[in-house]
Amino acid sequence: MDPPPYESVLQDHGNFFAPVTAVSKEFEIEVCDPVKQGEGVAAYVSYKVRTKTTHSAYGSPFFEVIRRFRDFAWLHDKLVEKNKGLIVPPLPEKSAVQKYQMATDFIDQRRRALQVFVNRVASHPVLKDSRELQTFLQANEEAWMLEIAKWQAETNAQHRPVSAAAQWLKSLQHSAQSLVSGRADEIQEDPEYIKIRDYVNSLEAHLTEAHRQAGRLLRKEADMGSALAEFAAAAEALGKQDGEGPMRSAFGCLFTRAGEVAALSRSRSEALAVEFAAPLKEFARTIKSVQTAMGDRAAALAAYSQAKSDLDSKKVRLAKLRGTPGLKEDKIAETERDVNEADQRLRNAKLGYETIRDTMREELNRFQKERGVEMSALLRDFALAQARHTAEQAKAWGELLRDLQQAQQGQQAAA
Image (cartoon, rainbow, N blue to C red; front, top):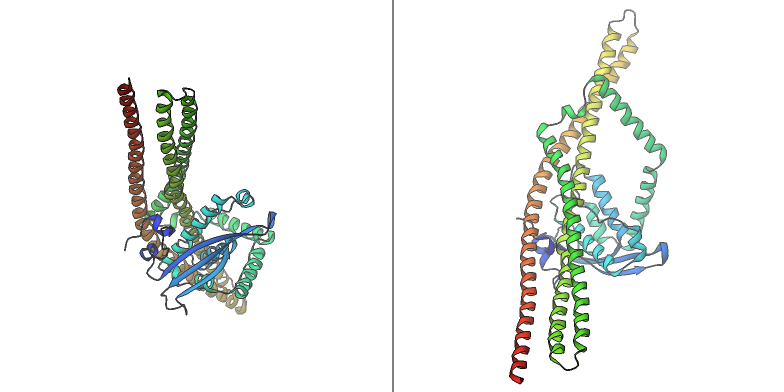
């Protein structure tokens, strides 16, 4: 089944359960009722997450929990951690400045983006069955706070400087060994995959630029609405200078119709932000998720290459020991054990890489198909909306022309 248009994922069309049926056969999820909690730097927004499901792992068909942005981040990070090679749907960006301002439009934009995120997770063929999603959707407050505390402790431990330095030294060592051996990970990678990887990296830049230009478009539409509203007010004031004369009637008509067009422009700008700019931004964030999965593959390939290099060096060492006369057997036996252990690590690394490679093959196929359909639907809906908007504006200006003609005919009859 092809994925639905982006707006159906938002679930903001009356009955919030109806549109999501097209997204997931098993889940219908709404993020709603944002409430600001706390003040100052400690302020945050909580949301109700309402779920209706037919998934067999859930004991109840309907449940509701309270979650905040940090909790959605827990779900995202856990899914990335536990599902190497899968394209985990992206979270909206965390903006510290907008968080402190807590503007109504920012809160609603984030609510919409979080709703898209969790519904994409629930519609993913693998992630929908994850324990992490079930915990996020169902855990009561006490159980949830324990999960968050555990996660925060793990996160703090992972970000210690010593751990980061150790990771850097490890990667440096591997890079040096690759250079010395004349064998880089890039050489071992599938050429067809490299083409896809380069395409994805190029796609990110183009999507980012498309989103930037969409932002310019909606700002210009909003500016046009403001300019028309100001022009309408000026026209009305000018008409009043004529007392009850014909000028007042004509400029009164202009004030009315220009005000209508201004309202249309403001409405269109708001619609562009939700229906066009937001999906483009999410598409661009999704490319980051694809790159994260590609990073998992690159890391697995590096581990595979490193394991092969380690085994080769240990085999060379063993051969030298065996050729050394008078060497004790226990020394050779110890090196043989090292070779066997290195061989097992190589097998494990190879299996890990091949698992991620096969997972990504399916994921990239799914990603290209779904995003292609969604992008086509997005552009189609954009064109239709622009056509409707232009027709509505033309109608308003046409009615102004009719009003002016009627006023002119009335003046001629009076004369």
